[in-house]
Image (cartoon, rainbow, N blue to C red; front, side, top):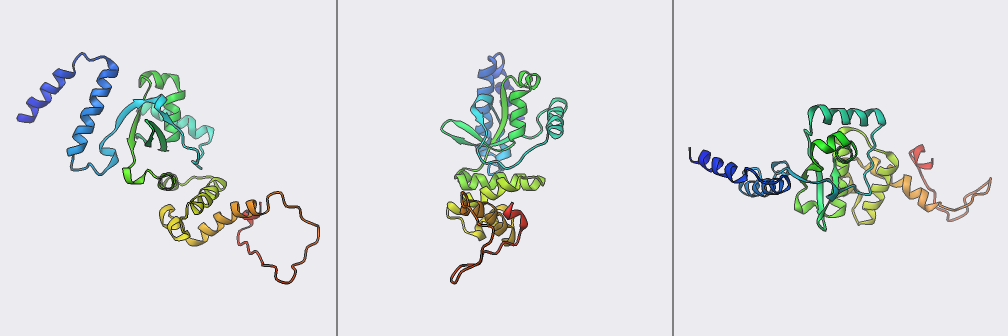
Length: 223
């Protein structure tokens, strides 16, 4: 068939290219095919291999992995290979991880895996309309919460940060998959700490006339 002839010519033209040139050529071909793909709206339709040195962590990810799980991830990638790409956003010619920070660490820090993938990492980019910092933060949280683990303190800071970016509680709840009470509790955790940072308290305190009552419905907010 006609496309088989095209494929054969393409493979012949790539034969013998040096490694890095071959990777670049394959990325360009995949991107071109992605451009005409019926699935081009899906980031996973275009997985490219990029030098690991161009991929870095974000500064807000609240997810953490305990050493046993981290070792299991290393074993999984060692035995099964990379079955999931790293999700990232491009910024100034480099890539910032949105999801897959620990997969990114394994590819950089485990020397046997680093050698196997020749210093590259598999990567997909989030949709271009989601590259604003707030949208990227929300995307990271959705990925994390779908797996069921996140740090409460770090999540609280994310919510406060989004509120500072003029996100309404309704938008935060919608984008992060939270109900209103959860948004309020997480706001209180960091909000109260900031409010009372460096403030001393006497052993006895009574509300004076006109004082507002602060209601906290989650003991964790006072810890």
